[in-house]
Amino acid sequence: MADFILSAEGISKKYGAFSALTNVSLKLKSGEIRAVIGPNGAGKSTLTNVLGGQILPTAGTVVLDGRIVTGLAPHRRAGLGIGRTFQINSTFRHMTVRENMLAACVAAAGTGYSLFSSKLRVLDSRVAELVDEVGLSNISESIVEAISHGDRKRLELGMVLATGPRLLLLDEPTAGMGLNERQDLFKLIVDVVKKRGLTLMFVEHDIDIVFNLAERITVMARGSVLAEGNPDEISADPHVQEIYLGESVAAKGATC
Amino acid sequence: MNILVRHPVVAGALAFVASASILVLANDVWLMRLTELLIWILFAASLNFLISFSGMVSFGHAAYFGLGCYGFALSAKAGVPIIVAVMIGPLVATFAAAIYGALCVRLNKIYFAMLTLACAEITYSVIHQWYDLTGGDTGLTQFAPPSLDLGARGFALLVLACCAGGLLVIRLVLNAPLGLVIRSVGENPGRAAALGFSQRQVQWVAFVIAGSLAGVAGTLYSAFQGNAFPDYAGMRFSLAPLVMVILGGLGSFFGPVIGAIVEKGLTGVLSHYVVFWELIMGVVVITVTVYSPHGFWGLIKRVINKGAPRG
Ligand SMILES: Nc1ncnc2c1ncn2[C@@H]1O[C@H](COP(=O)(O)OP(=O)(O)O)[C@@H](O)[C@H]1O
Ligand SMILES: [Mg+2]
Image 1 (cartoon, protein in one colour):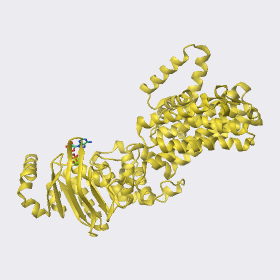
Image 2 (cartoon, chains in turn red, yellow; image 1 turned 45 degrees about the horizontal axis):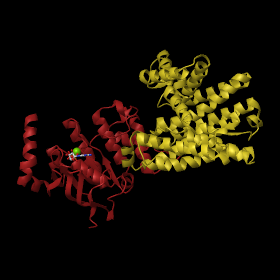
Image 3 (cartoon, helix red, strand yellow; image 1 turned 90 degrees about the horizontal axis):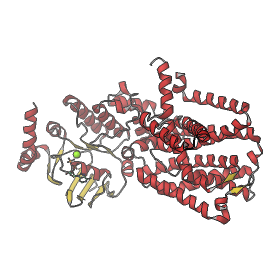
Image 4 (tube, chains in turn orange, green; image 1 turned 180 degrees about the horizontal axis):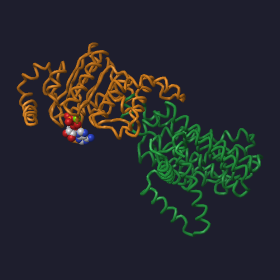
């Protein structure tokens, strides 16, 4: 049990009569790389939100490092080491790239209530470093509203990494990006995860990326976990092939 | 001119020296007008801090202005030395903002706005009904010497110092980590929370800062007018700084300064010559909201930037 950094047990989420999640369980070993896949509407984002604290589940418990965090507010979970990105890009749109990163660094430094601007200046070199890490140093003074979608995705990821999380929850971190851009960004993610020894759970539609990067894969459909296993087990699972892989392999064939 | 937009500190320092010179040279009538204007600038700037930077639209900011008035007036009436009484006013406002704020920040957007309105209405009612303490509608008078014994010009300079000080406090907060966090929460509470910032706590701090600055403005207003009325905590006094913030332009630091000047200027002139002046004010507000969302300050900035070479 101590091996699991995060374990969710019997999670259900109902919207009225509709069940977005039904009795979902998921355990993440410390240091593992987990992909969550499944067709649209499967409940992947809902699950990520339950784990991140954005959504309170109707039933079930979420345990982080042996501590029950089911009803804990998102900012407290962030304080406990959960860092996350959202499917719909979430940054501070009216600020510059640098200010966005600065805010994340202030969070990491715990100086959010300080009245001394010197506390910001000491972070300058760190901010520049982090902005550079996600490849945005040439647009660091641009307002986020004015930068490309892909760059916003990079920025959000960089901000989350800046807070120094132990567990990363990434909901479609490369959605809407071009193929090359996606692979670059995933390479960056995996590099950081390996280097810092983080635990990673990511939601992703690109099957190649998922099967190349993930150590374990959770397949969801209609609010439930359909299968869980390593890439070989998942690709051999007939249910998965039928419900998910078949359709997406076909879709991929059409775009090539 | 461009340097003024680029370097607000330079602009602020120049504006301060210019204002002080004007106050020294002004005749009695203008001295009165300008003193009152400065108080309104401070009041509007405190509300602008909430609306433009903290993402919280308050419909009841007069509560803290009014409590600043009554905190000062009542303690002065009770015989507290004036120098202490002028501090009690803002303290009462700060205390009220801390309590009301803790309640209001539990809600978002329009629900937050309605709650601030409710808090202000409660405050107004208490002041209005508690006749034995506040004198109700009759208000309070003769609790402090006119112009606090500083003379009209001395008092005007004190008000200028407080107004500049208040703006400086806002500026310093905005330039500090706290300001960055307040803006972050104001702009995207979900992202701020996921980074580890507590939305409620941060908003509460911003609310208290805004409330205490409004309390300073209220105290000065009460000393300036030599009276205190329940209206100072009422709807009209909540609406006026809101109009100033909108006229000046949302999202900017100097907006409320320009907004207060425009609003006081327009109402002063219009109410003198036109019977339906409030109607005209309404039309002006609508026109500005529709055609220049960044208000008069945005307009001024555009004109200045046009005259200067682009960087
Ligand atoms: N606030 C909500 N109210 C009602 N239904 C919702 C709400 N949020 C999500 N859903 C539904 O829950 C299901 C799962 O959504 P989601 O977790 O976003 O799926 P995924 O991320 O796997 O595409 C979808 O059918 C969606 O329409
Ligand atoms: Mg989703």
